[in-house]
Image (tube, rainbow, N blue to C red; front, side, top):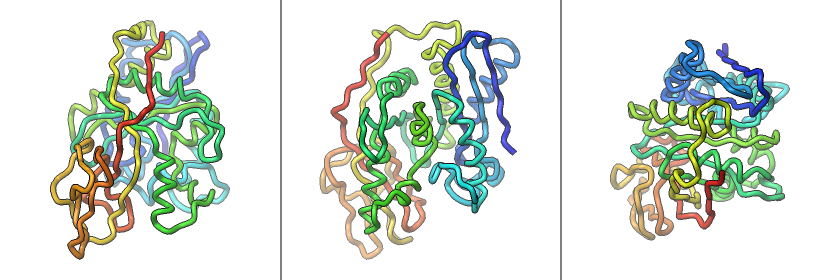
Length: 315
């Protein structure tokens, strides 16, 4: 059962949906949403315009089990289907109409390794076949307001690269598995930002999620509190995902405990394969999402470099 909370102002405005608990072991988003929900219920905060939907736990089965997935990753193959084959597919069929009824998505997550909070955005405006998009400016503006020191782009491009790297065909069906909540939101004419609030058990991650919801409401003009002026908005470092490396065997292991955004240099050993062969950094850049517990055949770590894209805060 999904617990969905909706708030509507009598004044028209943006329609924002905030998700927590897409992965069951990521609890900070849920707790941040619950804090905002309590403020709205008590009247401590009110909407001045628009509609707000809060969904504290998007994957109840995974949360019940306190693990990443119930039966599979909810943030993959995120498209409605006529014959759902598992729990997450049935939940997807409930969530998709909710997302399609909104303009903006804020999806709150956390990650397994140590590291600082960061936002993830989608492609630049384009008319290509992978992920056509025309709202990159608005999406970037929202990401700038969330208070992180870094923003990361390039998810679907790197997902396609990962498929090819595994020797598979980059078909429409294969790419559909890479679709998550944000990709679906963009396909319906909206835009969305994923906020990685920090390490799963970092108590500060709850505050990151809570502040981000209020920042989004201010930025969209949905509360009486004005948004910060452009000159006060920080300029986070913008990184672009360039590659993903899979774990091939249980004996594959990192040479040390990596944290998200650790600096690496071309050729530097990141890990060792089961046969002792080194896994070098593909270039000068940064490790993203290192997962020492990754299952065999899944993503072990991502590699990113500084992006040439520029996000500028505008009034």
